[in-house]
Length: 522
Image 1 (cartoon, rainbow, N blue to C red):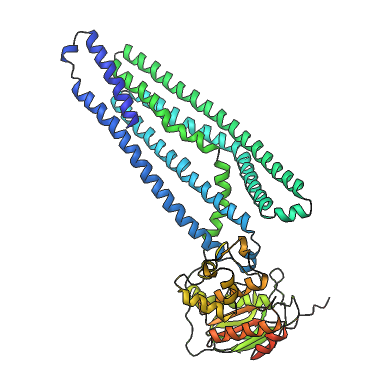
Image 2: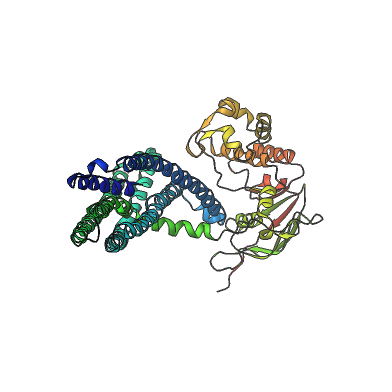
């Protein structure tokens, strides 16, 4: 509508002037063109508003779905891989990558496709209304020229754009680390070093961003020169065609003003250059995560089978596929507690991860309800199995919010019951109750208190199989016994598989399976 408005206005003014000059002004119909100008002016405003609503809503919806798919893809990764993720780095990377793909849609794909479509339609209209030669100039000048400039510009802007993005990521992470660990940095006298690291990242980002901006300005200059060349060509060709009597001056004005208006269609090319490297890097990281998701369907459990069965099972080293411990066999049914014992590093934690279907590799057979763990329906497995690893995870927020991560619909009574089972209820009451707030990563609770809060959260899941990795670490002997008894009371029918090393944990188990490390013979 913008191109049509300017072209019609140019034709209208030129035709009216020509009619007046030759004495036909009294019979020139001004009402129809005036009405069309008003229609196009209002239509352009309405269409632009509608375009903003439509494209932004569609993009935001797509990005919302992308965030969910991205997080689901990450959560499908093996647990050890997730465990290595640093919260600040991961959060910054996800936020930055999604924002970059936002720019891919709003600042590159949609404007580029719309611009090419408008240029093509305009060229066809000009060929019919004015002359094919003017249409050819516009098609080549605006359709092919800016594309060549964009390819040239993005080849130069790709590397500095990626470096600028990497610099921004480093700047964010280092700034977060500086703030989050400021007490430790002050104690060890490392504040100047941390500040220098932040300044170095800032300088790196600024330097590369300046390079991107220089390339963007150079590209903008070439596009502007190309646009004026197209306008000048349309003017020259139009004038020669008027002199030859092939078209009228009013028709020539249509081509000239359309060429002026179409410069807006190629403007997004310049804006997209500053983020092309960032978009490409984000796509390379995001696409592999969401492109091949593991299927969320599988076999259901066999009703008469034991809940967990291991047959000559051993967790394997992720790099060499060699067993971490000698193969073991056991069967675990509802209401039973089995403890895996052995020295540190023998593979107890990895064996628990295999029971969740989140480990890397294993040897032998490990079945959940008569089905290989990895083949059990993912949603069903998530409902049946809960694990409390050694590194517990708490978030900034209230006690209730941390508990309800596992059971969003839990009532206040259920929350207190879970806390009572792990003998944490009195401590929480002294701290202000369920609405007491925790700081970053659960700051405000001791290590033992945080561990019991995570145990209470696992109880709210009411799993059929509860996996505990040294659950009483940080608790005295008396409290450890009470907590274990409380867990069994809260989940009388659950099967509990536990990596144990304390006497209280071993004594609590119904059966013990020792894991003997594999001795490698050189």
